[in-house]
Image (cartoon, rainbow, N blue to C red):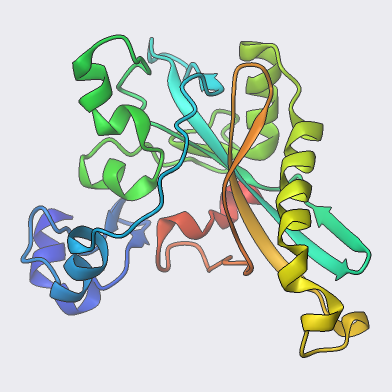
Length: 237
């Protein structure tokens, strides 16, 4: 995969899963010559958002690994109306895990410095060779799995049942945004307006849900096309 990425740079503008080779192909900024546009967007800009770091997330013990790894989740929904606010959130989302090879810990400076302990985003794991591809119907998730699997992990391995807290956290953020989304501000009549969205959340050990971000789109791409964060069709179906 490393060789093919560098040789086929024009075909590697996005990450693509190649089933026959069992790996992702994409533009590896640590191996190939970086794309200046990518570098400018991701590495050089200094403006950003500072968020609270949830230090006690729901953790997951992958079978046969002997580790406990951090998790977060992605849920999908529809804002069917804004006045009144009416949201529908599906239970067919998915969860992401940190590197399955690294134990989640905040005890030492090296723990804090190890990004693969804390990042659940898939691309750093793919680039580090620490991606475990989930297989539909296998029963055990890999580096990602279904939301139903995660809810079972939350209950059985962490002793929490956070679904209602997840709905409340998503609802509160939409409520906070209503002054900018009300019918008075909408260019489209409210009775014709529906917004698909997805939300990324971390849930802590007490079952409190923290929203990282909400996107007013539904990025479900065909399996293997584009950003692996977009969703895994075989997993979520």
